[in-house]
Length: 106
Image (cartoon, rainbow, N blue to C red; front, top):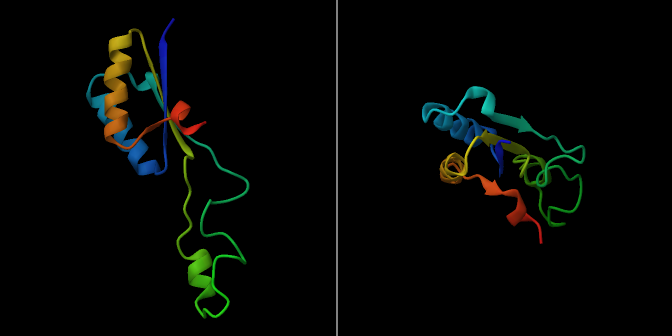
């Protein structure tokens, strides 16, 4: 049974960079998967019609909508036959900003 590793990224480009690095290191292309999870509620920042801006600000649009931020929507999954390969993949993913999904929950 293969070992599995999942890491979460905020930016798709970081996840793709990590995938490319794993492929260059010899991991099989079918063993490294990148997926994007969209949240129907929208970005965690930058999508609010009210509440972000101070009442006396005249830059409401810029403050509320200019820089939307998605977080934790990109997942990289690695499958490998042995624990050493998973440990090496974990280091690569960490170098690109991947976070352990278990560490994100209380």
